[in-house]
Image (cartoon, rainbow, N blue to C red; front, side):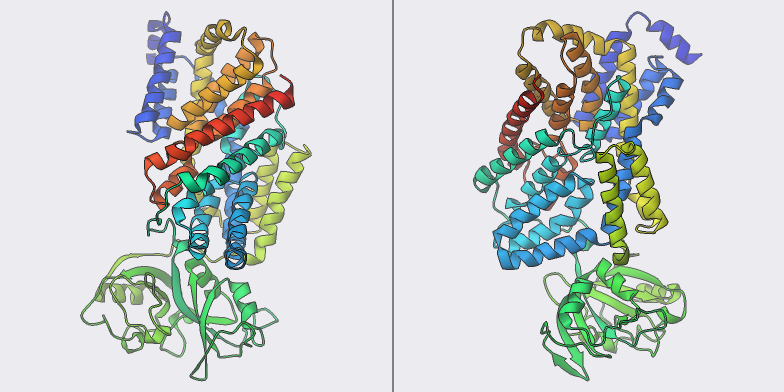
Length: 602
């Protein structure tokens, strides 16, 4: 009843009011008082309330394959993180930087671009921020010189394939609803390569002069950037262990397998230097530094005993235990005392690792003297841990956020991703079908745990996309799209195809800098298709221009998610992005449009 009343009341002015609602939605995006997903949902609800879209049409947006494919690609990307594929690759690159210098840094940025064409670039950038910062430190380069290029290369890499960004998939989905044929996996590759090469050359030539030179903020974006000191005892393999125990393995093989940094070996009370060719013996204690995921991976290995504990058998071996990470605030009873002298360990609680900013906390865990600010990983029964946390000055106690790597399933995760991409390239099945089958495969083989897979899906992006699809349908129903096309057609009637491409690209890029690129894509794609048809042109080149323009967000830290990530990590100012980003927008935009114009013959 209420919906019908508003529909009759507004029957004479649907186009104007529909355009007004769209304008308010864009203003909501611009001022950021509410999350973009909330603003878009409110706009979609307004269209539904006014009768500009029916309930059936609102429900139909959930059948669009683009958001489903996007969610599936989030999960497939998370499998590469959980199996340690990205960590292994990044560790190799850090080692390479120590031998090959700037060549390794350039290789990393090239790998980022290629990888961004195959997976979601947000987790990729999150993982690589601490890696590229370490590489810059090893080369005596300010982190601010490399973090913006990291984001820009990830953005440019997303223009290489259909699955490179969620926006590409969304534009293809909207175009299919407008009657267009589905796009191929590599259909935009030629234009994306031109954008990538021109963008990379622009960064190479102007980056050193335009990018600021200061160190990044000390705050890590995630726990993978924090290293803990710990120790591993080489023990006799248990019945469920691998047939080949660690005994007899060279130290260099151990570090290659576990991706740790060895500080020393203690054998029969004597400390040995960690020479690469040193042979590891049973009962050796390996003192090392590693991130949280690596420690948890070592904790689960049957041939190793991780951490420090006093009792003959830690509670972790005999009963259900929990792991807790806490920050030590300082206490008169424990501060400054050696770990071996504390009475925490009567019941079998073990210390898995201790992290102290910019320092090794001690020669071995037993000799560590706690200081305020130390981060400590503890394992024990829930009651024992509760007693320790209550009796000592710990703050911010929480369960570890990371899980052990599933490295033995890394080949499955890589094979699944490669299969999805390859089969899609050869059009064996729609990308949505292949990606869903891939998700089923990695969940079935436990390359990633189900709850981690769900956490990897950015729900806010999906809500935003569904809401904007509903708004796009409302704009079409109320004649807004038709009105825009009728207004632009006389202005562009005599314009050359190249000028038309530049206009579409420029408008897309400008709006993307201010509001969500997914929202811009949903609005402009049907406009471009209708405009091309009214001018007697092939709509595909204009769609390509929108795809590249929606990703070419270089001038602000809020236009693209990877820009926002490095904005915080690199301690940048807003103007740092403007200084180099505006030039990137212009050079990449002109090159992209020229490539589309020449290669499509529009």
